Length: 563
Image (cartoon, rainbow, N blue to C red; front, top):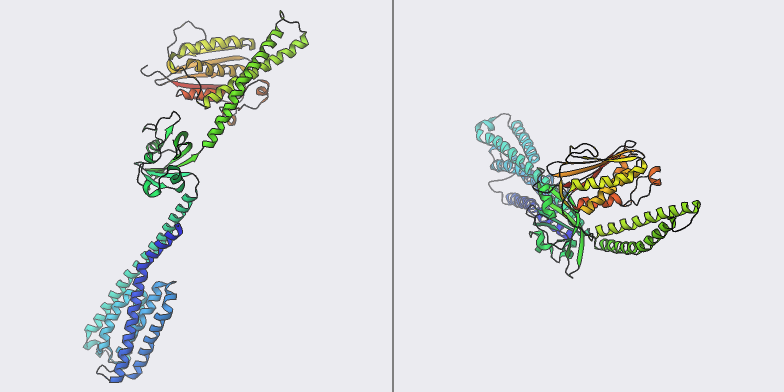
């Protein structure tokens, strides 16, 4: 179908040019045929416009050659060199006029008057024809001088001489204009073919893409709507073009709320001029089935680098989402079911370690201690797995409220300081400008709107990591704030993290690969959970570290409005 459309367009574009050339050739053929009839008539009836027989033969021969060329040769040459083919077609009748003039009185002949008209008309075929006609005119004048031996003909009738020169000049300018027109037509035809080819490629590409592709202008009206988009939406392309996309795709977010101007991903791209990728939307298809999407939207620019629209690819991720839900459900169920026996194992091992409840030799007690540590690690793993699945399924219970972040940081730091003492590590707090540790000064109050239990979990995880991956020294917990955000940083004097590993640090199950981390237990989920919780409350988390010089983990939360 796209190929047929392109062929039809190409045929329409060539029709006018073909008709123009063909009309001129037919006019030339008609003149040649009339010329042959006129010359033959002159010879038969010996009219006053008598043309000597010796001149009639080359005139008739030239006109006949022109007729044969126009009938059998012109068409094949026209496909390769259209302008040259036309110039050859119009030359025979024009040259035959000059031969007739030479045989009937030269400059004084009535045929020469017709030659003046032919000179001007030769410009229609381009400058090459003008050059040929001008050269023949010069040869004719030389012939006149030789046969008459003087300039008498030129002097007696200077009008024809001047008219000839003016005619050649006029024909030259007409020829130049025709040449420019032909070149413009060729360039236009080339551009048209390129545009047709580009349009054809675009249509073929769009029809071959399995995902729905939609392009909109700055008013969010549809400009491109491929076959996959038609299948998905139930709208045909003709009906969809020019319609606002949100009337076709009625998207909803993960909370089943319809999108507004504030949450519209297309509007966000049009305003910011930056690409946007999201998988937080779905729509109901014609069968009322929920289809989840990964929507990739990029801005389109005009020649002045201004945003003039956006193009989006809707990738159906319903199957992946279902697989993720099934996986998370399995992990959640398995983790929940395993917590009970693991807790029982941990309890019995704790009892076995209690000297008042059991009698175990030192070697056996060492084995039991290791088993107890392993059970604690396994219990934490199941707890983290449950947290991850709840976060990803949006099932985690959040009790959001405004609370004193300063107080929470101080409490957690004091609790973790007790845990750090056996490793000869101190946990010190730096709240605003109050100094270090337990100085008796009034700390500033920084209020944030979040879940205090979840923030306690995040901060405890960061401090615990700093203690685990340090051998001595201090862990500094710093809380500062600007006009918008409260920022807390946890700095240690541990082993540090390479720049390459920092890129993956907040991914699920990722752990830094070195000797110390292999000795220290961990699930690889703590930082992923911390990032998810912080981002849930509009904050962000990051790390600054250098190998051998310790690390600083920081996260920020928006302060309570109106602080």
